[in-house]
Image (cartoon, rainbow, N blue to C red):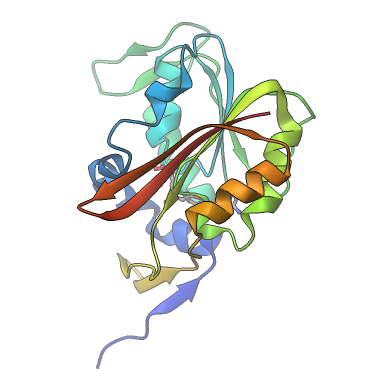
Length: 219
Ligand SMILES: C[S@@+](CC[C@H](N)C(=O)[O-])C[C@H]1O[C@@H](n2cnc3c(N)ncnc32)[C@H](O)[C@@H]1O
């Protein structure tokens, strides 16, 4: 008899899936086709908030390039995996022989994208990759991102074209994690209604179908 598939909120779902997540990193990269980070310009010394940072797929790359990164997520277990990969040190990042990294200025925080525990005007860049698919109303997060960004700061997001959440195998059986489909035009209009100005709006396509939207918007 097959076990029932649990439909879980992101914090519980990603807590269960954390140990499996990193097997999919190359798959996730393929949706961005290396067009997300190069569009941020020079990030040396920049204060970056990675919202929904997960196991650090982007946070680690950003810190390696010299940014001061705050990696934030609702899932403690995802951040726990990130924590095993880094050793915080007051120096420029240096790869360890063990494969671990020493990272300068990496801060880890458990918090919700809809209620960012940071002061106004405190980050140069807010980034959120594969996050808004888990938010029913991304505008609440966009509003928070606008608040914590410095004037002229950048918000960089990806919006995956996912109408049906995938089944994920975990040690406790199959789960799906609550997800929402967002039309690209709606994301743009939500951002513009908050006074963001859209710098880049890239639709990555597979044949003729968009698979991921990358937006860079300026406060
Ligand atoms: C698909 S993973 C993406 C992780 C990472 N950004 C990447 O690109 O590999 C989505 C992440 O968003 C987190 N998340 C979902 N809803 C969230 C929320 N409301 N606030 C903060 N993080 C959230 C999940 O826990 C998960 O780690």
